[in-house]
Image 1 (spheres, rainbow, N blue to C red):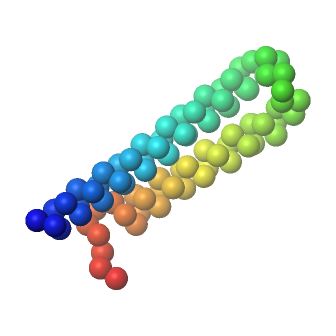
Image 2: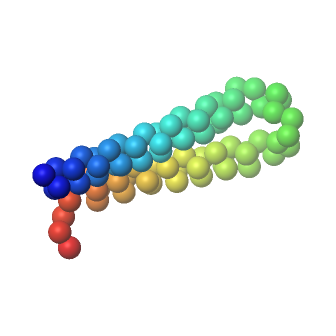
Length: 80
């Protein structure tokens, strides 16, 4: 019975981590779209290319998290 709870908790945590990363990717993608479609409307960023690069770096960070979760933690837990 304890093992079932562990697996359920594990799955819930992985699902939450994936959802969080996917949500942040969506947020940063939206920011890039704003920069690409109306860069003159972004007054606090004088260097649009640098601002887009920062957003892309954040997308890469969260995509890396998704890739690691999918590669190493989805499915049955391995015993070490």
